[in-house]
Structures are given as C-alpha cells and as structure tokens.
Image (tube, rainbow, N blue to C red; front, side, top):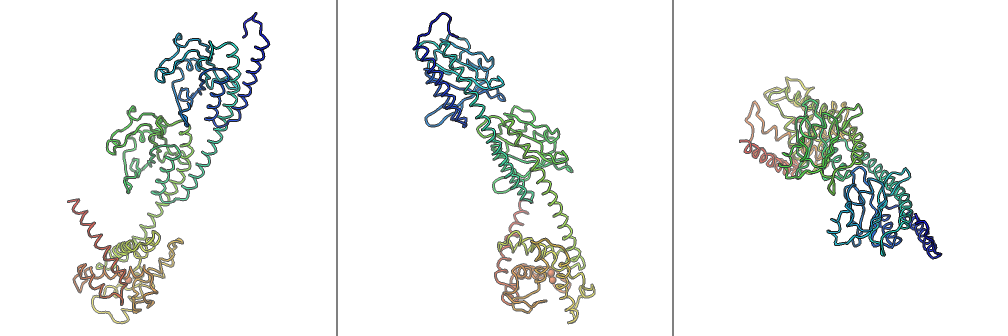
Length: 549
Ligand SMILES: [Fe+2]
Ligand SMILES: [Fe+2]
C-alpha cells in the first residue's frame, strides 16, 4: 500500500500506470506461451526488466516430490534445478504463502547463502511472492533479486503481485496443454503398443516385445515380465543374455517381484539397496547396478495375478513417478490379455504336437526294427532343411510331414510289413501303397493354411530323381526340395538301423551309398547339406557328452 500522506507527483503516477500497463503486457506475452520451458524463460526475463532488478526466478512446486523446481538458462540450453520445497526464502514462501520483501538477504536467517557461495553471486535485496492458482493453492514462487536502486518498494510488491496473477493463469494453461499433450501421446503410445503386441502370438517373442515397449514407455533402463507358474509356485522369465535368452526361475515368494506376486501391492522405491526385500545376488551375478525399481502385479480379467512387471532404473535418475504407475497399470491389462492368449495358443500347440508324436510312434511300434524311425527321419529332415535355410514355416511343414511320412503303414498288413524274407511283387506293391495311404489319411486331418502342404510333401519321400520312384514317378524338377530331403533322411535311417537280415551300416558307409545314388536316386545338394548337418550335430553331441563327463 502507498504510505499515507505521501503525495504522488504526476510523474510518479505516470510511471506507475506505465508499469502496470507493462505488467499486463507481460501477462499477454507469457499467455501466448504454452510450452512450459519457454514460458518460464519468458517470465523470468520480462520480470527482471519490469522490476528493474538483476535477476528473477520462477519456481514451480512439485507437490508429489515436495520440491521446488525451475529451469535456468545455460548458454543455449536450459538446465533443471530442484531443491526441497521448505528450503531458503523461496521455500518459506512456498510453505507459508507469505510474501517476503527483504532489503538485505544476509540479515535474514531464512536465507541460504550456499547458492551464492557456489555461483559467486552476491544477493542483496529479495522480493519473493507465492504464485496462486484460481483455487488459491500455491503452485509456485516468483523471486526477484537485487533491485537496481535501493530495496524493493510496496509499489514493486503490487506490481510483482500483478505479474504473479498473470503468470498463474499462463501456468495453468501451460500445465493443461502439457497434460493434454502428454495424455494424447500416452494414449497413442498405448494404442500402438496394444496393436503391436496383439499381433504376436508366440509367447517368447511376445514377452520380449512387451519388455522392450515397457522400458520405452516408462523410460526405464530395463524391464522384465515375470510370469506366475501356479503349478510349480514359481515366477519365471526369459532374460536376454548376449544373443540368447536365458530362462530364470525362482520361488514365488522371493524378492521384490515375489512380494508383489503374492500381495498384489505395487512397490515403487528410489533405491533398491535400502529395501530388505531386494535380493542383491542378481546384481552381483550380472554386474548390473539396480537403483530405482517399480514392480507391479499384472492381472487378468478375473483379477488374478498372472505375472509381475519390473522396471529398473528410471532414466535420468530418481524414482519412478505416480504417472509411471498409472501408465504401467494401463499397459498391464492389455498385456495380460495378450499373454493369456499366447499361453493358450502354446498349450494347444503342445497338445497338437503330442498327438502327432503319439501317431508317429504308434506306427514305428508296429515293427521293432523301425522303432524311433519317424522321430529320427524328422530330426534329419529338419536339420538338413535348416542347413538349406528353409523358413520357419517351411521347417514346420517338414517337421510334421516327416513325423507322419509312414503313417499310411497303418493300412498295411503285419504279415507283409514284418515279413522277413523276400517279398513277392504283389506284397511289394502293397508296401508301396503306404505312401498313398499316408497322403489320404493326412488329407483328412485339418491343417491350418500355413500347413496345408503337409499331406502332399509327406507323399514324396519315395520319389527318385530319375523318375523310377513311387507312387508318382516324378523326376528331379518335379519333386519339391522337402520331398528330396525326406528321401535322403529316410534311406539314411534305414541303412544305419539294424535289420534282421543285415548289420547296420556306419554313417560313413551310408554316406558313400547316398553319394553313389546322386543324380539317380538323390539330389547332390541335398546329400551335401545332410552330410554337413550330420557332422555338425555329431560334434555338438560330443561337446555335450564331454561337458557332462
Ligand atoms: Fe516310407
Ligand atoms: Fe520311412
């Protein structure tokens, strides 16, 4: 308030009106800034000028962290500074809401001279006011230092108070815009993540994708999804280690993840080492240094905990925020659905495979001399196809086709199938029939689009390059590579297996025989690829045995 009795000259009035007018101008200018960073810079610059002071700061109150923060210009960039909201003059104003007009900072016990010491600045006069929003809540503090001449006056207080009101409006707008932009980005991110994870049905790839997206969304250094294995009462996950994924498992109640999995309560801590539930053994093993952790339960539609999210080390230090928790919650319901679908798919795949394997071994079981034949032909076929760079889909077709290639033998009489001596021509033809029967039976099975070729491919395993094979008498170019591979695998297994009338050949003898058949019976490239695969597999086997013993 103006001191009573003091008469204002015309010039005084003129100057006051001008400053108030400029104050409104500041308000207009800052109101056009919706970018918080630029707004802060602008307010500080305009206020310094308007107050005829040396410096101005606008601190914003971060209620969640109990801190005041601002951005200070540093060359072309700006840097964020933060301090506890109850420290120093600004802190006093932020907690009490009082305005402070101090002619000499060093005379005031609330003043913290540490900043001056660090920066080499010399603070003299301070004018500091709270910034209140429309609900009269403190949202920040505006502080002006070192008036050019003398201490700050009451008029200065009024002007700064006017600035503070304008700034409050601008800040609320900026916060709103920031929040809207953030929400929009978050929603877009979540939708995008939701879409990309719903496209992955295979559990391993899905988990990898979720972990990657979670780290990205929460700005975490690492994220892990642990899944609950109810049967074994364990948590498990796949963690990337070098190029390979390694499965880790531990009892469901252990560590921070275990605690979250059993209680369902979110754990959000800035320093893992301060929490007794944290198990530092993992860090010791991996050489990683865990700092902040956010761990949250992942629930399915029924509210059951099916897994746990664990995010480590928030980018830029500090703890994960409440916003991060909300984001993870939103992510959690999406991922739970995708994971349950993938698990269901995995279960069905296992069931399907177990049926196929039972079918294959039931055929092999009809003749003690062919025990394990289908399984071995499958291994040889898939190994050779891998060596020839078949696609995943192509490998799956061959895996199933080779497991079932002799299934048609189910329709051949035991008397013929197991006949020890030479076969009559008629008997021989009956045996040859097994290929057509394989195809017929498999054609009655339902295969998804990707696997439709299985019956046909399985029916090519007795064709020969020179057209003398059966049942279709196809020639080189007409036989699909998959059929050619199976032909090699089938003969190799027959040669190296014991028969009532002869001893098994060694691999080397069998290879020699295969090579003799190149061009007539077998494809040279396929034989070469099979040989490469076979020796690689043998070397691996040897390594395994040595590692064990
Ligand atoms: Fe066969
Ligand atoms: Fe066979």
